[in-house]
Length: 189
Image 1: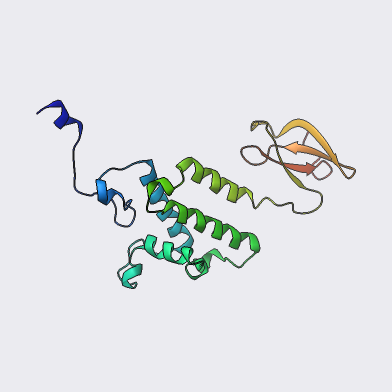
Image 2: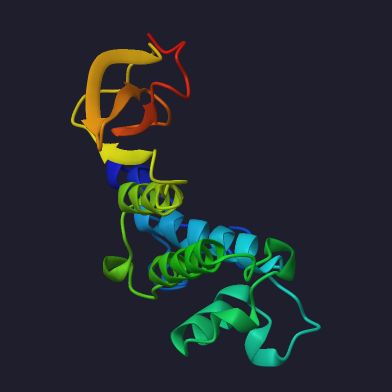
């Protein structure tokens, strides 16, 4: 065998049905964007609780990705949301499910170059998660900080809002910090 013959092995399509990047069937090459497609299928599974491949569904909906692309693309995501997620419990829940569905839709794009990177997917999911950190009342305020995450519960900074003394506590991840009124938690020193 020559060196060229050893550098590439062609195989028949392999992968779990329903998760495999549809472009793999054209050129038998997988890429990072193939993983993005598969993760998009997982996101759809989470928000729908439907099987990835289900022959009891109508022919055009056997594949969950095809079903999701159709419903999300037509703006009918509510038709496929798992009721156990309680999407109408509050506005944030419904909005978050819709944002995850939109992200899944982008992950399931047929052309790889139209899909986000996994880093972009992770950042968007984190953004969706943190969007739920709305102030509980007028005594709490969420602020972004360029400071890195500290393992200490208090980093020593203090702010005043409307006469309330607020100490910055490292609650959460990344650069998000929750400001807590000192009078509520005097133990934060």
